[in-house]
Image (cartoon, rainbow, N blue to C red; front, top):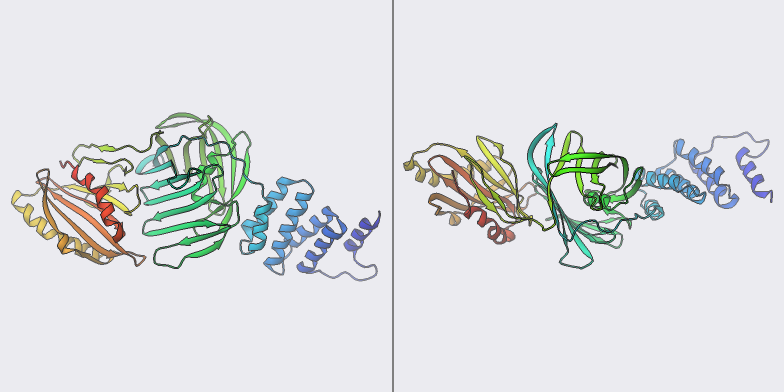
Length: 472
């Protein structure tokens, strides 16, 4: 019965009569493993593993082993919170040690999610406030049933500022990701989750296969996942997410308080949740305390994103009416931004619900012109447009001369054309545009960043906006 304490004592003091020498981190690790597995002294092993971690390790592999073993010891002692912290530190600090990271993920507790709190369809729109001042730009989060499976849902997040477009198909009950598609400006990335691996694809490049541990959620879906947590006072949980660059990291969500929040959509009593994704930093989210857990607001630094409207019927058409500016009707799903200064005029950004265009624009400016000069202006416009694009970062910008078409738009002289170019990712893209000229207004409406194969589909959905234009 005294064998284990005696062995532990011998390990602790060394062989009597021998001068002690400094042990390497690798030797300390082996001593800790012996103390843990053979002697069964968990407290002694914990002390040794912490000694390894506090020392200058021989290698990252040795330190990672000590971190993992520390988590195992704490787990065996029933200290689940300490064990979780140890495993999370391993995942965060040693992502290159993939085998240990995978084992650490398997030791972390699985998320306990509340039943789905949203209706079958949900469309939530948010405004962007910077330093207390509302800025141009709109963010929309939406949830829809998946057309591919009755057990899946589609999560969508769109930001007209970046512009950015994100779509994920996930399991309805577990929120486990199936696939994602993301467009950030000119960059497009798609991912497929396959039995612990993720295949990330970029147009024009070879797909990358990345080992991702089971249980990792997609990072862009995190606001939806947090909404499914059993939020309450002092609630705290951590779970792994996959970042945009293909690395897995822990996300920690902690309820800091309950408070009332006033946003354009109304007044809500909310859980204030701190979401820490180090090293990216901490973001603060406010979720309604009622059964819906609606995301009411979130803050990143000096930027506040506030709910302006929410419905359970999905997107609706936008009837855009403004004084001294073009008016138009955008079909359901298109996001229409507020006008903002651009060059010598004003611009309204439009977000394509299908993501086929990088961005849509309505640009207009007040400019007097004699009726006799309108025809000359429209004849010169293709050449002016072509030279302008050659001066920016689009390469080989060339208007399809056969596409140039003069027509009447509600009695106004108009010109339509298509241009091809190469974007910054060296991929072929298309711009589809219409120019309108009156005696008082010069206007351009266009969609850019379109894949050539998507042009016909895009024009079918975009042309009704053009045809509905009313020019001041």
